[in-house]
Each structure stands twice: as structure tokens, then as C-alpha cells.
Amino acid sequence: MLLQTVRPNIVQSIRAYRVDDLMQSAQSAGQHFLYANLTNAQSKQDVLDGIAEAFLFPAHFGKNLDALYDCMTDLVHKSGSQPGFVVVLEQLPDNARFDREAREQLLDVFRDAADFWAERKIPFRCFYSFQ
Image 1 (cartoon, rainbow, N blue to C red):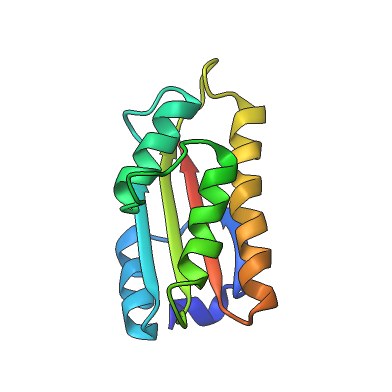
Image 2: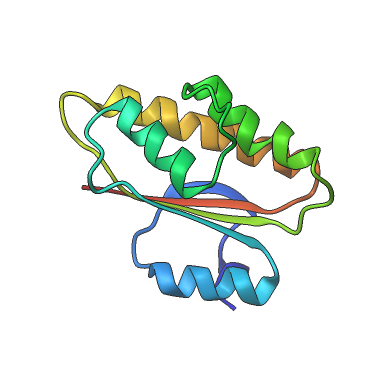
């Protein structure tokens, strides 16, 4: 199984992995599969909007990095026992409106979420690609 070859709490480039394979592996393992295709996003706000829509965040989502962290951790944790997560952020923007610093801040939220879930012994794997 594909997920057995990937550390259980990590944020990494999607590299040679295929989205369909990751989705099937998550389903086989009984884990949540969260996918956001951000091809049309150009700015930080576009990225947050795209993630919120794709991940079905509640209407009260604050559309900032702190709110993103809360939705990926506390909100889900409070909803009950979790089997694990495979997250794919495909085609993150690479432009002046969403530069390297903005991307690293976003990925830091997912790294922090991976740490949150690791403390609870729940796998949280996040894969990303750039446009």
C-alpha cells in the first residue's frame, strides 16, 4: 500500500505520486481524503477560498491562516475519533501575489496540523504541487 512508504505525519511535495493513487490509498486505509485543485488561485485569499470550498469548511471560516489551522485541527478533533488524513494541495500559485514566503506560511499551517495530529497518533499526510 502506498501510504506505508510515506511517514505518517508529513508535508511534502507530491513528486512522483499520482492524485488518484493517493485517493485510493486513503480510501483503502479508511482515511479522509481532502483535495484542493488551486489552478485558478492567484493570491493568498484565492488559495484560502479554494481550500475552504474544496474541504467544505463551515460558513463562519475566517479565511486566514489561523482559521485554516483551527479547521484542520480543533474543529475536526472535536467532531470525534479520526482515522487519518491524506491532503492534496494541487497547483499552488507561484507568482508575485503568492510568493515563496506566502507558500511557506501556508505549508507551515499544514506542518503544524501534522504535528497536532501526530501528538494524537493520527496520520496526517499532506502533499502539494506548484503551478
